[in-house]
Image (cartoon, rainbow, N blue to C red; front, side, top):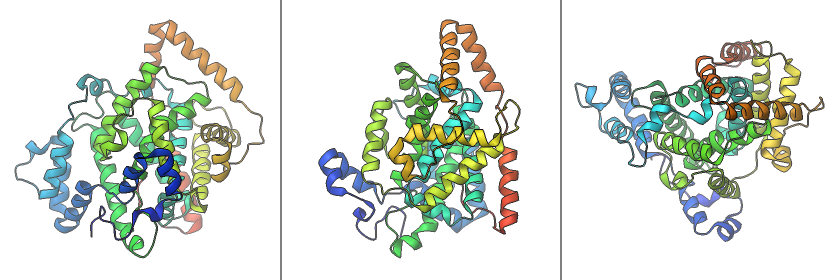
Length: 402
């Protein structure tokens, strides 16, 4: 059985199919068809990697970095098909956009990108019980969240850079690898699914949640700290991330036509209408992720806030991002420390206002954002995760970030 086959009816994962059909027909019917959909190309590659071993892995690595034409021998069927799809750039992609990279995300100071974008995107992913249940099997929440923070931050940094998604570049290769890691997780989850677990984890709908996490959700979190973008910037953002969705293997029916936040909100509303509320795994992973990020950022160069205030700031941002009702379901506490959001929002709005008035200032900020990675929290996240794993006796994580 492959990951795109359904051994039982898809509505098992739907919490209120009748209401979804009434509100979103015919989109709801289309969504139900994707509840048990995986990524046939990537799923087949995982099978071939297991079957042919090192030779297939080497061919895939060489093909991703140098292209299918760089291989002396024709690789196996599934690897060939995947490379051909990745290299067939859709007609709607503007090559100049790929060379420039995600210019909107590049304009965000690295500190706010880590504090707002990464944490909100991961929290949005963890809110899916199907994903959280699968990730919970990989180790302790601290271990899993630490690993997710590192891998997500590195991946996001690679794909937004100028030329990052061009064939063979780091972002392109990393996105293809992330797609295959999703396929690996699906393959490992099929046994549980056949035994009655509802819905296919890391299928098309969960992949769509990840995509929305780095577009709609991330920029809702950034808006909470005064970093807002214009309608034209929204258009550029979704134009770039639509190509990222293509590389990730996201079904075009989910992202085609999503050209701004309004379209993304409609997609999120549709996904939320058929997704069960967060469970204990969701809440544990989110809490561990915030704790890990706050610990890693505290004391890093350029960061003056202590760990407690950083944690409170992240929870405040997350609560404003998801709203009170959803935040309560996600177990996000109401911080007891003084609310710094009004001051932070004012300072960020003023900075972006002056950058808009003086293009030279905007170019300088953009240059610094590209050249500087901001506070390098990756080693601190790793040390935090290792230290806590050792104290708990937990082993290494089996899964990468969703």
